[in-house]
Image 1 (spheres, helix red, strand yellow):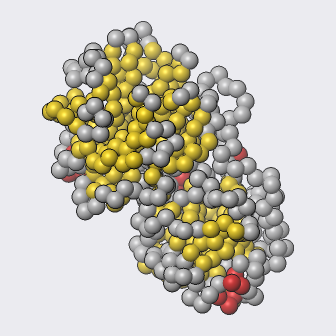
Image 2 (tube, one colour; image 1 turned 30 degrees about the vertical axis):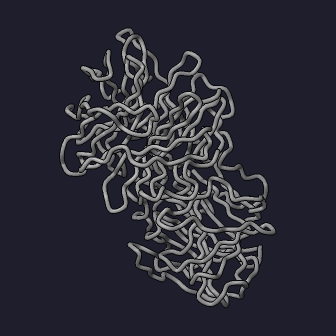
Length: 526
């Protein structure tokens, strides 16, 4: 398998053995940890899965996470053992509901009387962040959206349902005061019998008033133990290279308080492997207690994004929950077991593929071992992307360049969002180009003409999340570099503040054409 990057040929610019994309690649769904462990501390959802939520429904564990600006919106995962997770669709597979335009954040899974609910955050079109709810007869859906529950002037986010001491259901959420340089109260308000609207008056539980919490508290979730209701919450700056996020806990005898914050807060902090752990959901399983939360890997930080981690905690003699070492004990992700490969030989495209919700879901087709992607003239074109799980990798795709129409391009790109990417594309008549698209402005970094090929493989290489180079193969025997000014291209600017970088196939051009891809792979390196 020639994707192996040994130290001796890592920077080799020419003539490397061809990648055959054989069946030795593990898929994204491969279990990260196969051997029994002393604890369940592990990366359950490697890659960009912020603000994860978990619930046990009908004997299985169900999880979801923030999808931000990518669809399907709010991916669903199912597990029988908290270790091995399988994709199970998404809450909104065709994009956000009509009232919402962006910021698909912080879903919270909840089940009651055989009915499943997702309380989630999204931004009203032309308006503020709002907490909304959708429901379904089964945890896998299909879900019916019921629209926003609360939309305060500063914005409302991170909704979480919780029963009070009398068995009444409330919604708890954060007023997004930090968006306008104000405090961030945590509010509670009763839910109606249908669980689709708020009733009565809202009550403040507490706000950010401790030094470690910085400008905010958010991400509330709850568990009962020893006569107390415990709220896990996050504080400080969530995202990016300079994040300061951490996890705290507070408790109260009754939902409306008074609330007491743990004197040892924050109870989950950084170590040499993980950074900025926070925004999670606690769950009890077979007498043991876990928090499903996110954190950045120190090795990949913002380039991969916030990864979904399960951390075990215990109850101390003082009644407070405690994590071993007060930091994330999960091992670093085994990125060499997280390669991605798709031969497009199934009946439908896998749930792991994503598309930007700024555009309608692409009407792709799988036919004869090819993925047919319709072209779009907007921005980078039609994008179908996969999450990255490492900062250093090679990614490649094979396409039929002989079928490209004039003005149409097909290729592979490292994408931050639809306005920012680095791409290697093929055009009609043997044209190859390297593109830098930043803030929606396209710059051609290099251009060559080659003999058109029905099996043209385009490759991008990334190391450290920051440096990129491009290569191509036309003869299934050798790689040729596409030389740019300087040995590599700087991609430090690619990741948005709240998301990791994806690798995408793209189809750019006027509507009515399509690009045929026959293979895609991402192979990680340490």
